Picture 1 (cartoon, rainbow, N blue to C red):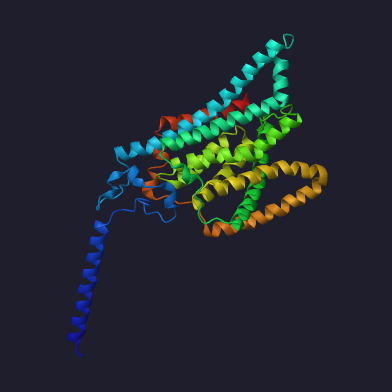
Picture 2 (picture 1 turned 45 degrees about the horizontal axis):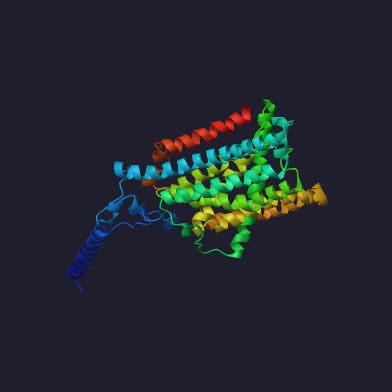
Length: 385
């Protein structure tokens, strides 16, 4: 074989490569973007965010491309989802508080009319210390959490079946997540303690939750325990991870994870619980995305709340040293399991186009920003007033 033959072979190969590249380019040009993953982000969970053509109908066109900056029509539709979430956060905050105060006021009027000698402060102390207050608190939060969860899902067009349509979940993973959550609980307690020590130096306290004298009766304690360990985890997960996370995830899952964790934390209105709820909220949002369901988060949330309730009784009967050792062993196991979990599971990253559709658009939503402002101001007032 001479040199001309090799040159001819190389020329044929180059022509074939050129032809194949042109064919691939044409196919890519005519290919419609994936409506479940239009930003071509391999780190996200496409099933969770849903069909993006609801926001950008032109995705059905074969030559459509997602622009780096959202155009006005797309921006308005994304902002609507942030507004729906912000509106529901505000509604949940105001209705839960107003409903509680309204029921207490009505009961004070009724009890006062039946006991003319009792003053308002005595009546309120009686309501607060009995099972009445625990029942009122439970009813108010059930109505506000579930009511605004379903209302938000309706406004955001989220099917209720998506709440529990769980994917790739098992008992082993549930156990792993619970132990990880236990470590996060202990870690957040250390962080909260460090923050509290700084506040104490300036004459303030970060823990504004005064529980002395509240629901001191047996029935009141039972109601508060059932609410804390079962009802609150279920209803809060329906609201924060069931409705709010899906509503905020339409264009940027990473932003949704941290935004819902922030609202989950600030809704407790004190720094120790904010620290725990924020850190835990990030983890709960992540496993909700991963499994496309709130069931894993509900299980973990029940475990954390129940553990925090039981540990006080374990310490009372078994002693401080035993309880501390038990907590340390479980927390160390949780730390190593968290390390293993993060090796294969990361919070979704954000593409440049998605970064323009996260906080950039959310801060243009009046309802979203108002919900942040009111919750923060209320918490600050509780701490410093």
